[in-house]
Length: 165
Image 1 (cartoon, helix red, strand yellow):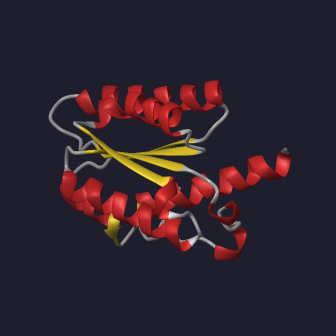
Image 2: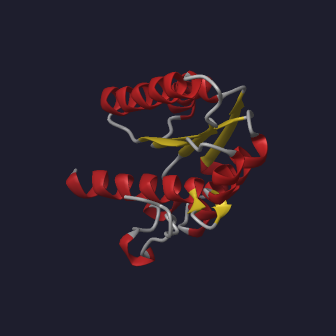
Image 3: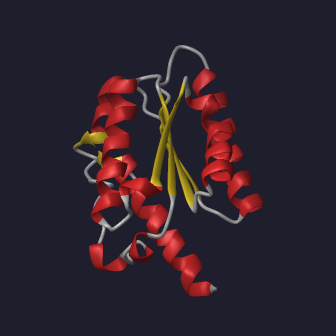
């Protein structure tokens, strides 16, 4: 679906179950590269998690140098903090080479593998814009905030896991 004229962060609040009375633990790993963008994603995720009842003491935020380091840090956070879900937030802007394709592919595949191996949601919150304006548009601009989207997706997945069990 094209995001050309859509705020991708719109969601229906009633569809999101309260965060298990604040018992869920959520990890957030954030790339320091393009920090003006990634920290906006982090802030959106934090605000959303708290809005839906995740206790601040149950949210663990760690920084990594770049997007490529997100999966390993996500795994560490999952293991050491016993996180129920982990959000991986980053921003890889298209450059003059195909570097972005390799990074984004590696990170997305690693996070999917972690989800399948651990049976816990590892959310791909890496925006992949062509330029800085597109990044800003997806980090709190006209297309919403990918950090908010990841937080909502994590809560929905944890609610689904609880329902299926």
